[in-house]
Image (cartoon, rainbow over all chains, first blue to last red; front, top):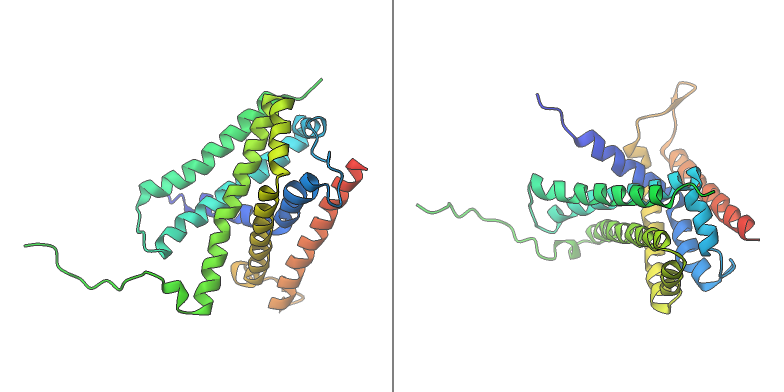
Length: 120
Length: 132
């Protein structure tokens, strides 16, 4: 019997959902509201120097990659299943497109993080 | 012979028929905003890679009222996602036994929510401490 790829995507969906549930709300608040508006946090919270330092650190790279990749896999997996709910019944090709989109986003993020390098 | 004409119940607007369906669809729609948020961050990473001028332009775009309003919507979606995620955790997790007894559902929901609150405070505290 051919092995199902379901557990892989289900795990990525679950990990993304858990990460989003645990820190997603605060992350959106910090990056989308507090830092840009200078509300509760200084307006230069996400300065180029600071974000570069974060992206150059291996732990920062890991964090950025985890957030972007897992949120994408979580979102795309659910959007795919949503199609069924709105009456669009699609096959395996479209499913691969949704998961492929998340995988492509992950690869782009990994490439950018590697290109940014480790500083010094 | 053509295809047999099987009756298919129309699906238009089915989620408007029942408040439960409506909240289900709102929850599912939050997945679109989660994806868009991930793409905003990915684009920011690309702008960071391009250099300071590009990254500052991305930051300026984030500071516009339209972006802040949009992020308020994303914030609501993430909060709703977190709430429902922990609400169904007793059903999505295998049973946990402590001292021979099953951990009650509300304890699982409460500990999930408590972990989210603790980690969120930790994250905000970390950012605040770094930018002090």
